[in-house]
Image: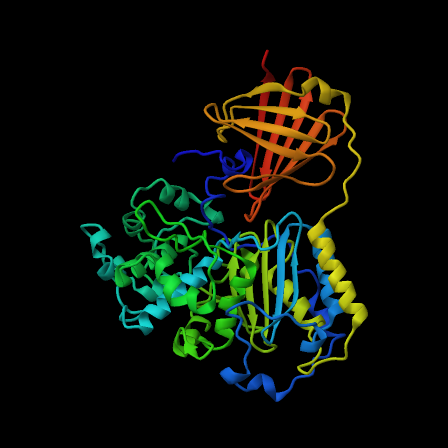
Length: 538
């Protein structure tokens, strides 16, 4: 696998798949509030409107953009929403929060340093888009149904000899993650399966050659490569990469025009991850499902598909890679929370689309390292902010507090005075060569200037320079993927750098401890860490 350092080496070289793959829909942290405690103090006035299917004429269609309304006009409490934005700002790790009710955006915040109107890698939320495209292909008669055997569709890429269990694997088994493969591509297996996939030149043939662990349909096992085969199937039956089929069949009708969706070396759209969208465009998929697959008079995907995709098709148990998903059910590339009737698209690091059909609420988040679970943030909104199905009295004070909270979230912290210890002068501009390591990091130079530092990283072949903020704020290095870094001295000899690839998950921390002519380095992300040593050159 070719190493590249066009993005922060302390991210891309720590985890082989941090930049190019997803394998984990897990979240970090616990629910932000105790739903039981919140529900004890909140009354939601429910009317028959929620049990009546609205006509297209009465529905807001955000094809050209979401209309904005005050929370109170949609029966929600702006004070509660403001409190949530304030807590997320303090917690960190969140890039955006969008709350929609009845088709109106009632809260929309981006969190420093994530810029407004930027796209975000949505990781495994991609799977819910690929599943929807399978439904559309079936609706159009391009695919006979979910019971078609996979090797029958992808015969050209299948091994010469296919074992009996693999022959019985159907499209539905891929949709429900019950394919029976020995997949081994989630966090529980240290992503071994994805590493092998990315080292392959023909991803479709590679996945079809995976050994079978059991009969298809027996057990849920999270498998990114199963979703990749769904993308390969779309290409086979439509004659187009899934990204191009999506442009015509899904994105254009919904008004999604700004996106990036990469392909494998063999030209198949990466069906399990890597789709880059703006948060408000993510919300459109949830809104489509809230309205039974219809969009402004057009049936984009059939009601039958929506029902099947959002119905519990299989019980994942502890879901293998993340016990926190215990109790969730899985449909066709969608997660379902039976207690709350939420339909959820979940992606690594905190990329969520949560649709609550009972209250006609959509919650969309993007994050680098979310401090909440999808149910945690949604329960807080539904149980503490939704007060009525009818408009509430205007609340100018609450609206002002919410506006101020959103403004502070985007602005970030005030700059701090810069104080450098004596050692900063000693090590500034000096090259340090590191001992051989699994990260491929050969050397670095840290140079301190008046208002910022510059970190130069090398893998022995390429040298990449990054600005590092010293005043408590991130400095953003523009490039193929913008990179935000800030650093601080911890004591007299330890310099700590926090790095965030803008629009991606997995922030990284680089700790540098200087002792005489030596340096001790600790590189860590939420999922991996490594200790290195090095010596001053010259």
